[in-house]
Image (cartoon, rainbow, N blue to C red):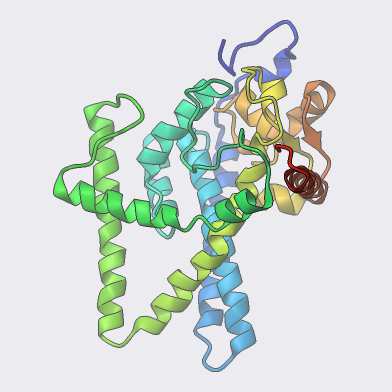
Length: 317
């Protein structure tokens, strides 16, 4: 069975499909405009000379948006933002450029994650394994996983050398061409940044791109962490292997509805802004829910502390 199957124990309303409407499309466009607007505000702040508090705030805003953009890109992956399919790639590719996330590569891997969740074939694009024990070293290592950027650079080199191939199964030639084209595109901003630095204009590159990545990478990890960790990862039932967090309007906006993850896995093509109306069903029937992000992170901290204590006492996490 797959995560989209309706079983007798699964409420049908949670799995009900819905098409993208004109209203859904407008909602997503507003989200894009807000996200790009906040980025512009951050860029203005970091370019204010000699104003260090403003620059630090700008770096935080820009980094927060780079992580947020990946959540917007995630909705594009599922073709649940626009009524016309081709618009999703047009909007999705730019959203991944700052963190070197290829829209088409991410889409192939992520749809496989939805298909194989709860099996040994499950493999998410971002490599944190939710089945590993929760320990402080693992959490810190994954939160600071800047090595993924290096892996993306390696993919860019392989694409330009004509040596890139998909390593998680078979994909169509057209999909392979899209992935290669996107990674090759990423060379443009990288070479542009290098050129600006060599010409003596490296400071804007540092403040608008590189330093914000120090914020974006850990923030994105924190957004993704609750999805399946401490759930029943041996089950293919979305009501057991996935978590939803009720959250606030702010956390729902910032994560672009990623907190409503049970609802999303149950019906992955439903527009994100429609998921809230299904949340009561998830709360009534799902095994893993949390009322807020602070409560979830407290649970993670308790688990990590318990595993650390077990390790000190000679046991296993």
